[in-house]
Image (spheres, helix red, strand yellow):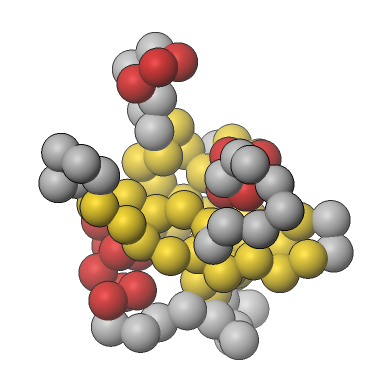
Length: 91
């Protein structure tokens, strides 16, 4: 199925500038991983799959580019207005 992201690490740039810097999770084989957002973006571009599991739902992780050109990750839009990654535990 892919790599399940279970935790996120946020920058310490203050609330308005806070963003995800690293993720942690479990792969298909059961092994754990910790990766930077840049690594995840790179792997997504190579068609590797990442997802989160929230309240029994599986939501795909995608990458996007901000208006300033910075690449970041988020979950595919669903019924919530917030990014599901931000509801994960911190590490």
